Image 1 (tube, rainbow over the protein chains, first blue to last red):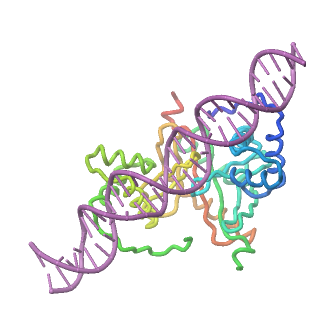
Image 2 (cartoon, rainbow over the protein chains, first blue to last red):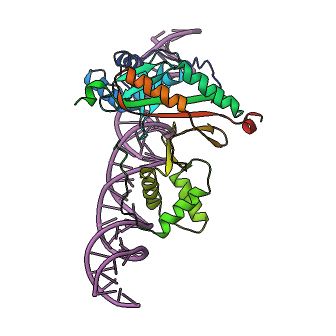
Image 3 (cartoon, protein in one colour):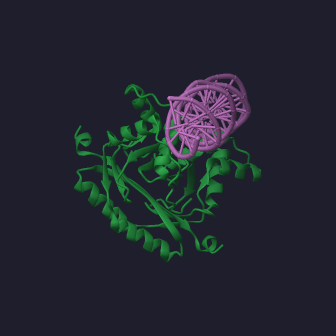
Amino acid sequence: MSSDAPATGPQRQTRQRTAVQSVLEGRDEFTSAQDLHDLLRRQGTAVGLTTVYRSLQALADAGQVDVLVTAEGQTLYRRCSSEHHHHLVCRTCGRTIEIAGPAVETWADAIAREHGFSDISHTLELFGSCPACSSG
Amino acid sequence: MSSDAPATGPQRQTRQRTAVQSVLEGRDEFTSAQDLHDLLRRQGTAVGLTTVYRSLQALADAGQVDVLVTAEGQTLYRRCSSEHHHHLVCRTCGRTIEIAGPAVETWADAIAREHGFSDISHTLELFGSCPACSSG
DNA sequence: CCCTTAGTGAAAACGATTGTCAAAACCAGT
DNA sequence: ACTGGTTTTGACAATCGTTTTCACTAAGGG
């Protein structure tokens, strides 16, 4: 579970899988599986909700999408540059900015080591009001 | 919602409310509402699950407990020093260490301001294997 | 073209949390 | 202590996102 397996699972090329991936390509915001499902339907490329969930999970496992759990417990997905990074998300409009925080990584590692912890991972997300939304 | 209201709501002193608080006092780990409910039952102080949820919410609103949403979407609670801080949690045994990270706060504010975001909040949790668990 | 196996999806199951609402408890004022 | 007006409780139903089930379809190597 915590071992970083290549996870080069046997992936068959299907219409559905392709559709999910392509929709993610065109989106910059974090999107829920259900919203993605709606987008696909509206776009004419109907894909079962179950399949959307499965595709998303596969992509997440493969490290091709970021996963974010909101305070309400809803899981959101977003295609990403596969390097480790964090996000600054507008809590009103959802606009997202990718942030690389080497300083934080270093800090986290130091703190962890200091306490004898190993195999460290962390979650860090910033929420706020973007210029457009806070001026309203 | 995001304004830090005193939240001095009309709180009546009840057996249930007291029980929930006291159990939290004796715990160092993050605990789910359901587990808390079980603990109460086992302890002989039966409290309805609904009430546990409500008490926990009230405590969270009052800033007397920390709230943490796991990757699986489950909400965990933990009594805490009411200052802002983060946690280093062992993903195997759940052992938790409170961490104050002024550096991170500063960094977060700077990044946010840099992008014109205001009313910033953030979530940051570290996960790893504690000395005891990683040696196994 | 066929066959094996992976993938799909509708519907049911699930698990955490919240809403409902009548009954019970709290507490201020008598 | 007794009463009345509120608040709180809690069993149960309802929600909501997500996962499981399982019969059916399709990918793609032989």
